[in-house]
Image (cartoon, rainbow, N blue to C red; front, side):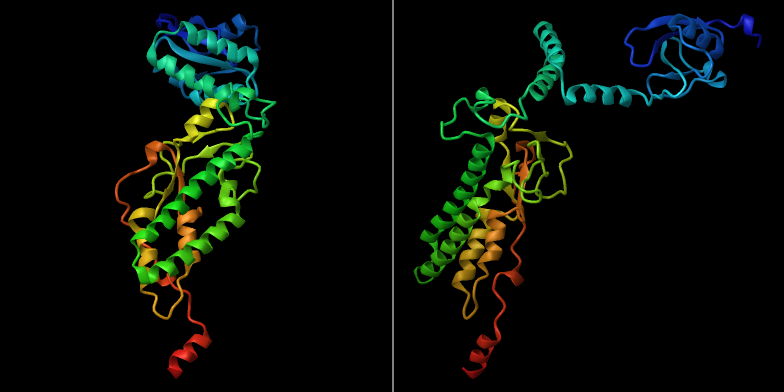
Length: 339
């Protein structure tokens, strides 16, 4: 009831962007504010207090309900605070282009850290920020190329090769299926595979998907080389927000090899057998091999996914029957009527 008889409340107080905290006690919000400004040598006019946790402004009405030892920020005119998210934003800002001193400090912390969780967090942080993302050539970042053949002189050339190798392996699987196709349809099947191969060679086996120097809309990464998981085949995106930059360092390059180009409509279970059946049953029609090509080798049906988002269960998706054959031309229709 009377201010003088109220028990003082205690708080931990600090200024914006300062890690140094000090204890302060007061019977009112204004008293705490005055003491804080005096200690920090800040003007009382225009200043106010807020909770560190969520940025809620401390008022006289709210003062008594705030628990003792709560952490407060003293803000001067024009300063704002939005809670933990503000600290996280500052943290991310520091590590967007980290200084050598910051990385060294993190390494020192890691060397003396015993708690497994903190070790993991520090190790992941160092892995992310200590890479040489901007470097592109072997001369600029020799450690990145350790274990690779000397013919790879740039990061982009290796990652193009990596993508090309995956697409080539898909073509080999399609070609090898000819051995189980009926003898009378085998020649037609191989002609279709040959057409696919020629188109793939023309686009260099879509190696540009992994090339950060390729055009936007073709590459699957940012200009800096960041890839984002596109999520399992049956959802629109990745709930875990997996991301990786194989251009950063050797470890990132190696880990990226565990990411998958996942066929939403499955290659072995569906696309290839359906293609073979379409060739066999085509009758007077012409197989629309470019449709099957898009399902097998392009991002129309391929999703780049983190290994944890690569579901090995049956996808239970099928090819579109209306797209398996090319529309009949008027000439073919006339031939059919005359027959």
